[in-house]
Length: 162
Image (tube, rainbow, N blue to C red; front, side):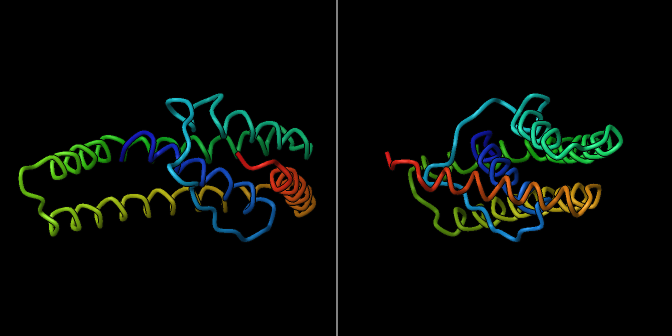
């Protein structure tokens, strides 16, 4: 999996984390062309490290809750890091297939299936981390997060299109 694809997937997961913690059900899709960010969106100070800490602060999460949620996402980071090398290899294979003298549609399709399966596994891992984190918070905290997400979505909807 390429770094940009992983970052897009992680951003999608970040939105899902906030929505699942907030008790809402949503399916986040990456935007056209994906999104760019730092080298590791789940690293300390990355998307989860910065924004999730801020959200937990806004809902007055206890130190125990923060520690549990940090451990949940640290485990997810570790699990997802194991996929990066395999993802890079798949990307290299994809480049080789598209730059070959003869385009092998069957091989490209088989590789696409492998890449999709890897994306699905990462999405499933992030979803499980989101569920685990939601269980750490109280119903009132999850409701507050849902309200914050609704306000953010309203602000984003009112932004002018580029």
